[in-house]
Length: 181
Length: 291
Image 1 (cartoon, helix red, strand yellow):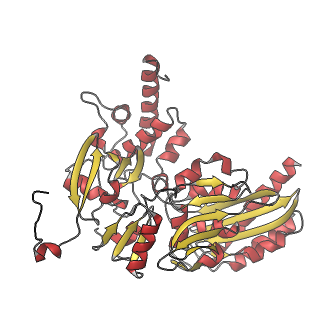
Image 2 (cartoon, rainbow over the protein chains, first blue to last red):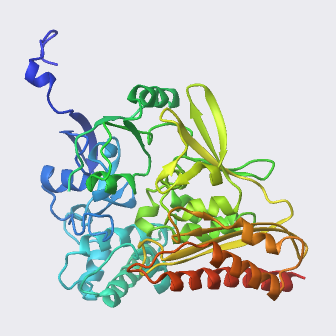
Image 3 (tube, each protein chain N blue to C red):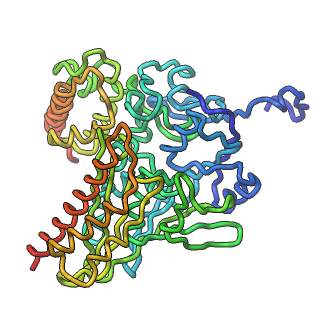
């Protein structure tokens, strides 16, 4: 509020509904004004310019637009941006640390888990959520967890290998630092 | 794809949500998990003037077994909560079988059982499970609460009997008298596709004798089909091959499938027959093993 009293001009009164929402994106609090019909995927891509989140099918089928909402994978094309108000969103840009890749990213690099790369951000975020919950998944569990993410190159074999690679790497690292505190 | 313009409210109390729906006079729509509604908004199959987002309402995320053994599923209980609830497998095997088959894992993190039943898609899984188990929807409106059996709640394709000022706050699954048995099987072309056909069976048994049988079919008609009539062939005796065959034939006859890109009507009828046989044979094997 800049003044205690301000008459709203007619044009503004008729204007589109706008809501102010605060979302923590990749650890940073962002406050934005959005129309309620704006999809979370569009807010991330066009609003926040984080174009690592891909919109593939736009019909809730493919999972390319998957982001983590409070740590759980969701399809950002099937959620309104206003619904993320007060929540934490992690996109693929938030996976890596300052200087090193996330083990899941390393796994995809090492095991050739991507061909065209379009589905990769969604795959990696779903994989991260799986490993956060289940650090030692079986191959079946990996396939099950990724069954909502489609790869049109059909490169599933290496995607699954990448996730298992990342799981092993994370477990090894946890062993080194004596995790399990 | 962008939805057409709508007003948006995210009330913090149930009364407030009901007030908004009342004011909306039928032009306001509840948004819960949004996994069916948002795609419909984007395709502009739905264009409500107002969305009442109930995700911030307290006390609706529950998945609770009451002292009498009945299961209450709140309007904000996500499919994934049901999928992870290992304790459901004993008392509610049909629910435990269906939960991992709903949509895909990512959709299951957002979508809700109650929302799925309200959406009343003939290819939705939960309405069939709820009808087979004799579940009811608890609806709250300005004048209080009422309970509606799901078999009466779903009034047609994408139609339910809720008044415009009512919120479906939970679905209640009654406790089985005796031992619960049953299952859910679905055929889909790939994970997340709409069902080609699905079958839900809910049984109660005392020893090896079936005391209650409910059955409902997914994706083989203009609405979820209540095939409990066919399931009556099972009541009052053991699960013999003859009784199983009669129930399977009855279910296949109750199906009203249409030929489409997922398969011919005859094929879908065959799937229904096979699934009923498979679920009941598994139960019979379990009973035999337990004896």
